[in-house]
Image (cartoon, rainbow, N blue to C red):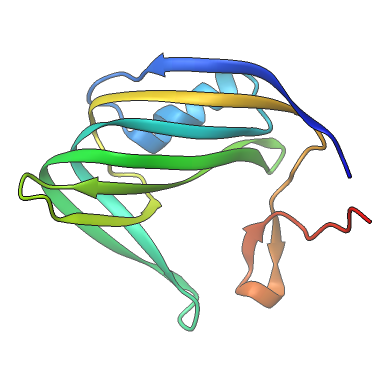
Length: 145
């Protein structure tokens, strides 16, 4: 089994009005994190979430307006095209307690966001197109024997 260790822990409050996904990618690149885990909470001014429709080979985007709570943000950082790349999912709720979740897409302006990133060291993960899975860029399967 390949060993992976915690290299560093990055704890940040992200800039208000910035796009959440863009800020996470910028932070990963600035901190030179090529392997990591993301967790976060906060609130958004609006949101765009995606659900992958495998039969149609596309993401369906759902947009939400108004004040939204980030109930849960989780994801990972790996390499794509030789650069740090954030893949995250998010669960949001509105003022009535209705909740939605999905793939974090551009279009999520931050009201407030606090994130913790575990920067890892060890075996690197690089996203590569997987033709058998609609061409999605995923980590290759590994046999740790």
